[in-house]
Amino acid sequence: MSCSCGTSVEGKTAGCNNNGGCSTGGCNKLNTFDWLSNMHEPAQEKFNIVEVRFKNGRKEFFKNENHLELVTGEAVIVDVPGGHHLGHVSLQGELVRLQMKKKGVENNDDIKQIYRKATLKDLEKFDQVRKREMPALYRTRNIILEQKLNMKLTDIEFQADNTKATFYYSADDRVDFRELIKVLASEFKIRVEMRQISLRQEASRLGGIGSCGRELCCSTWLTDFKSVSTSAARYQNLSLNPSKLSGQCGRLKCCLNYELDTYMEALEDIPEVTKIKTSNGEARLQKTDIFRKIMWFNYGDENTWHPIPANRVKEIIELNKKGETPDTLTEDKLELAPAETSINSDLERMDERFKKKDARKKGNKRRKGKGTGQGQDAQQKQQGQPQQRKRKPNPQQKQGQAKGAQPKAENKGQGPNQGQAKSQNKRRKNRNFKKKNNPNNDKSA
Image (cartoon, rainbow, N blue to C red; front, side, top):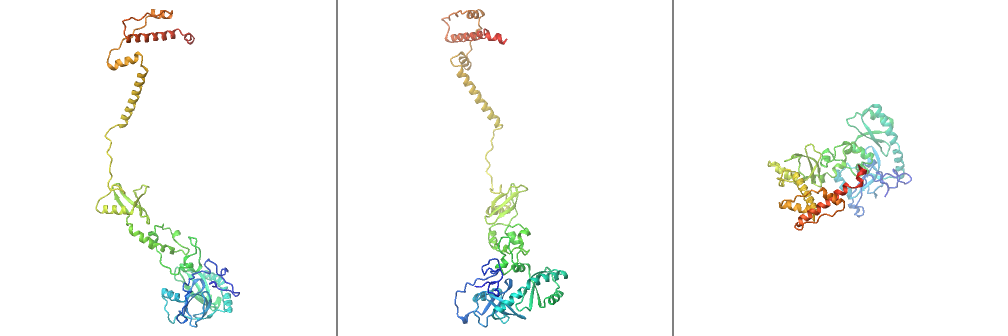
């Protein structure tokens, strides 16, 4: 299959010079796959209208009344008003009938015919004609600036017989180009046709790379330009930023309509609401996750957003209609725990802690006082018994102890408690005597 960019005199493909294998929008621009090409049909039942493609994807229908054996991509000479033109076959067979029905083209006498297949001489002449397009484009733009016309010249297409040229331009308002046509006709010695196109058609003819990193849809496969509104962006929760929503043509991106139906189906289960009422106050909607069906609300000026399922939001809306307000966004009624009745509970905890410390100290004293009179005195205090009065040591007795005299023996009639108390008094006297007679005391003094 030959390249649809055109074929040069030497038999090589023109345009990108990639021999039909390019994917940059040159050879494959608005190509149509003929999925019925392998089906053999009787020659008398074959549809005799062929789709022919011209420069930059422009396509028209022509009758094959001469029953030429054509191949997709083959160059043919067709009838056009005021002469003939060279194009390439893009589609034939039953798919052409479907395309005519889709575009609303009727099969009548208005459809022109195909003269013949293009010869090598036709291709050579067409190649020379196309070389005039770029210099003519630059010269025409200078003429437009000289005449101060508010229009933008996009492209020029010369007819294969070199008798006519079509000038494609875009403008916001109506332009009076009568004087311009006279200047161009005298400049290029041809018939001039001015054709105004929209900005989307301009982008489709020029081509380019979109923000997605791929070739523009309008220049590769999209032929029908449907209206795109900002409501499509609102339904998809997109930021209404013109720089992000606009395509290469400066208009809203055509791809905003691609997933709009899916979003519309998902939005059927999500209620349309801006605010709901609860006992904590009025909550306002901040964001909606359409496919997860979660809605975020916040109270007043707080920065915290609360995610609420769409079903729960519907329940709150029904309660608000009845004049009721739930306690929170997630629960209708809060179960409050019983409050503590004790007052100054922290002080009570401190008292308990100190009581435990006092109990530990008393236990330590009891353990230390075992086997001594102190433990017995403590027991006597607890039992309420009167304590035995301790006797003061006699100074004569101290002197006797210092000289090494032995203490007098205990009376046989004394009880066990009295004997223990006396032995304790003796130990105390000995300690006091040692302290007084310690030689280190004089040094320290």
